Image (cartoon, rainbow, N blue to C red; front, side):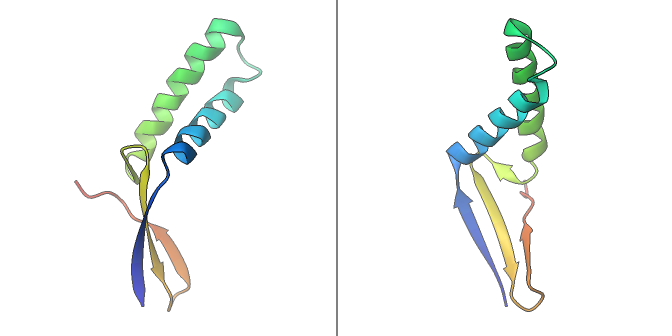
Length: 77
């Protein structure tokens, strides 16, 4: 059996993107340079996620009980 679940997690994606960007540039830059670089990487991550995450908060997962898998579904335009 296959079924899909759509989850709405606005804070989770926002927080994860912020954490990843800050971690990436933590030791490379300081002050204003660090913040500007973190903002750039945040935008890169958001652009990458657009394939699977709608409006930076919705994600759909398809579960297959026969195969024992869970797959993140791509957004169809």
